[in-house]
Amino acid sequence: MKKHWKLRFTLSLLIPLGFNLFYSLPTHASEAAETNTQTDVKVNAQSSKTITSTENQSALATAQQVKDQQIDSHQLVNDTYQKIEQNKDLNSVIYQDPVNASQQVNALPTTTSNSEQPFYGVPILIKGLGQAYKGYPNTNGLPYMQDNRYGYTKNFVAKLQEMGFVIVGETNYPELGLINVTDSNLYGPAHNPWDLTRNAGGSSGGAAASVAAGIVPLATGNDAGGSLRIPASWSGVIGLKPTQGIILGDSLTPSVVNFAETRRIDDTIKLFEGLLDPKRKFLLKEFPLKLQDLKIAYSLKSPVGSVVSPDAEKAVLNAVTFLRQQGFQVVEKDSPVDGVKLMRAYYLGALSDGTVANYLAQQKLHRNLQASDVTEHLISPMTYALYEASKKALKETKQTYNNELALVAAQMKSFHEEYPIYLTPTTATVAPLNSDPAFLPAEVAKILQMAKMPFDQQMDVIYNAWYHGLSKTPFTQLANLAGEPALSLPTYVNAQGLPLGIQLEGEKGSDLILLALGKLFEEKDKLIFLSDYQKLNNDVQSSKPENEDKANISKVVVHNLGKKSVYEFQTVPSKLNFSDNVSPKYAVRTSKQGNTRKLQLTEEKQLPQTGSDNNELVLLGLALFSLSLIGMDQNKRKF
Image (cartoon, rainbow, N blue to C red; front, side, top):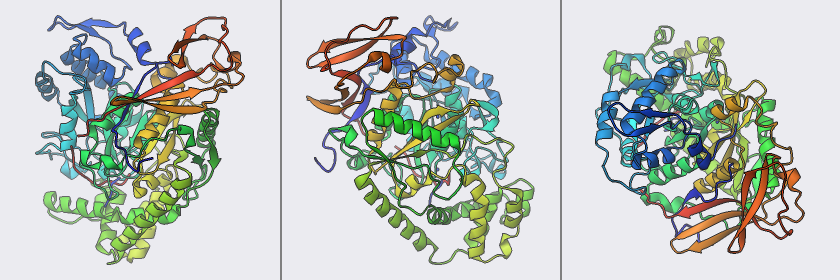
């Protein structure tokens, strides 16, 4: 097996089965089903084109309909603004510019192909923090910066436009992206569409809430401590944190990674393909010939000793059962990294946030930050704490931080030699209430006295103050310091109707392998989104037989087809009882193509015979096509 890919791959479905130094989501319908549900037809008064509803449809499918002139892009943008207005209680979108969006639509080429602009005419929301778009607000969530605007466009955002996206606004985030919930003195909280009394998560909370509510099919965010994955877990969407430095413009040193919140794995894959740095494609790992050779370790233990909720444990254990049923070897094994030591180093890396905030205060307020700025709601308690600690940081602080980075990277590299995939909860709890403070009053009182403390004591105060939030999300920071990719999947909803995600973390460069696993979960109807959950009225899990996935996948085969390779999950069952393995709603039929038989589902009361025990059933297919690897730059955030 070659050390690095010689072929460049992306993934797409072959066979539908009905089925934030650094700064830091009920079953979906298939693409085929989506087209069957598009019955809401509108007529644009300014166009002769027919407008078809794209609610809950993938971005790729919507783009194709725009290209085929089945949908008018101007009306699509207008519909997005209507959805923002209809969901204004979420406070997920903090800025809109319809005039600019209309200009972007007018600038779209009149002729295009799928490969040139795969997201042609699709509206997208970008995160208000660190993703510069000329003319849009650039506040960092600081009240004294509220009139500041970007004077340039980052290549990350420009690349989105090259792929055909139409930027329609900015999403909400916390001050400097420092916390794992979205709330700030300037913008207020982003409410969770599953329960408006709860937070959407942070720091990319506005993005996750917007996707979960169906305002847009995907929205960009960034992550250097969990900022994509935490809101993905709490808002019930898909959140990929790519390998450090693999996205165009991102640094190879642990810091922010830019990407997005999504609802479809195929959208996620195509976006990843478009945003890859062509000079970093060597980082991608080669696919194994047999996916089940990837031994999976799982852990239910908080790395900082906090309580992990029964819901979070159950979400992981459900995933363990599912993966074992698919033929994977899954064992319980904690990572070798000292979580408390990691987080203490992590907070050393956050000190520059305080320096940045004070620099901006000098520009706008013409003075340094002070404790009264906290009580007067000009800055958050943590921003002030980091500023005070940054003034007393020791000379060896940077080296201490870098030493921990090297240790974590070495520990995880060794760990992945035996366990290429590491499964944990994404978050230890479901989303917190918006009334739950990010920092407890007793800890804020200590922060206000930090100017009098020595550096070591200051860092203790910072750790203890952050712990209230960290205890809810202790699993995500490891991937950031290790520079590894991690994927949050929305596989669980608790008895109160609140989502919670599982996290799959892999070695550096295994992004597409994680997405292949995500595709498996998706095609086996294991991803639960708000719209489907509402439609099924909490009956998603009860509608499936407990042992539905009893038939294990026994092999994965890669076929070389000229410039393409087809990656197929297959099974060779010994004795299958389909009444045990398939929902009674469906009948199983197989059609022979070459040396394989493709599984098809048709609604039928009686289950037909399926032939001999040697039938090969293609449960799901992933096509690996050549990637067009092609901008952006770096910013620094904590969560």
